[in-house]
Length: 363
Length: 201
Image (cartoon, rainbow over all chains, first blue to last red; front, side):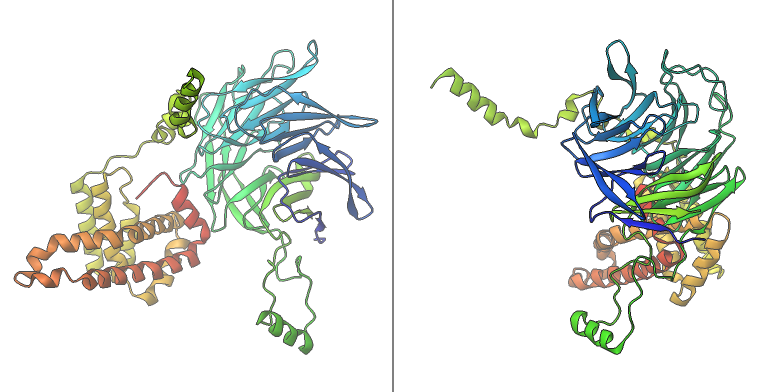
């Protein structure tokens, strides 16, 4: 397994990151702006800065085909940044929410995006040609608390959302005139807007940090603050799910997760490293870390000389420098995204975290 | 004094910045019963929990400390009243106190490896925290309640503050050493689950 590619961008938390389709541009949410980095050789160089929000930017997503960037922020706004020859042009989206926007993702069709918020609504936003602006429709019921995360089904109609009321839910975000009528599937047959296709809670019930549909869209995984991941296999409309498998771990909670095929999940969070889960409807288990331990992670191997030892003893009162974690990330991983893959199988994925690093891993 | 001044004085005294606006909003999350978010627990009454306690003590007397601990943890009364929960806490504490320090880790590892073992250790962790939270207050109050019977003529004995502190200190050190060992086996995840879980012990 090749070593991961580590890019230490700055000493500041990265709330979210997103790569463009050609992987030449990297958008990073930092403070109140979004920084665009361009690939130059082996590194990334700051290219542009998208300034438009006046509070912390919470999430950023680049549409794969159109190259549009959507950002949302604690200032309760979302902006769509349209690429143009003279740079990115922002357009304000009418979210109509009275609390912070927490999370935004483009639908796979790129005609809509979903914004989670602290106002207990999910705003489904789409472009209205006749008025020439982005409008939103709210999914309200039965959300009881802040939406922390959303994830799209491959059909661009179903949307999974995780909330601080400890539930992961699946909604329909069908919008007439924008979406094609979806085929009936395991999540339901008729899917008008705001249909609740599923509502899931695990036993120890922490608030939900991450949700994700499997590549086929027929299973849903979510990670919660009780250090668990839960995988749900639904069984058609109005039926109890075929299986709900919950794995509680000995680790700290996971903040983000992705599927690698239908039988593997990669999750990372407060333990600062990515872990692999394997399983199926019959059961899931944690199979271990994706990092090879003991090697010189981010901390370079220190030269072990007598001079160095006495210098350390003099400076710090100890010989070993234990201020560095053994992991590549030196702080919580907040986002995991697929970097390279095909047909649901992931070859490379990228992580970003509170330590200001972007790391590209091989699975 | 002009009318404008009077009005502004009145509004200043209202101190409107401290008004809890959530109480005035019917849609607000603070006007909503969080217990409706999760399925209800089966109710447990007083007699039921006492019987369970006796069964657990019987196992303990028979020398099966591991069975007693497992039994106590698996019959945690989530749906019981505070009194019921207090009774079961006593049972669990008794079991914990009767297990020798050298047996703790092997026993925890055996439980962890079995089916449902990690759940049992999560419950144990909840009892450790509950025990630590209540041992300082409850032992003192139960001491005071008992003191008329115990001390008879020597009323100053019961009131000696050190006595209560010694016993709660001993109970606390048992709980702390259990805590350390449970974290070793079940990880920090189980501490997190104590906080998130709706099923309070």
